[in-house]
Image (cartoon, rainbow, N blue to C red):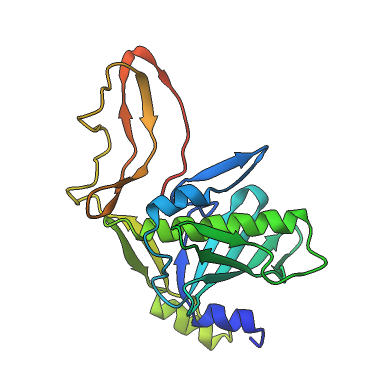
Length: 244
């Protein structure tokens, strides 16, 4: 494992993210593509701070049959640098692809954030590569926003010691330990599934699923679970949302 990026992945604290990498949804849509809305992100990210100086986010993208590991590093100036490495699987083979691009997310003085997907220029990068980098910045920002919710906790997903011992004997790399984000459903500030905010008039709308979202309180930010609200007698609205 001589590749510097692979070495960083081995040394990093590793996290598994949901399919598509978006834990909290604050996208802006342009045509058929979606990007992180950095203006909205600023409402939920108090400090552009990683839980560890070096982390690796593992993200599956089932629609295109790939898995990406995003190496993310905290910089001394407060910015965050991220570099992706994708495993592309075909019917005949699987291989790792390094984009040769590095993105940077920088805090601004007015509380917003600037995302630059071309921090390291590569004359060969194309539109697909730039869009992929924007998706990875979205995954990084939504991960940071989720961590700043007071009822989102880190849980360890430890690789089985017996299995790793067997793999090492066979000359294989041991499996990594991971951390995952979980919602503390016992928290008094977490809205339970099937309930709604009592201050909101639910009788005036058709029954629908309210997406999981983050709520800003006076002294903290919390995750509110998805719930069904509204009056079923007025009809219903079917939607699908991405949640943790």
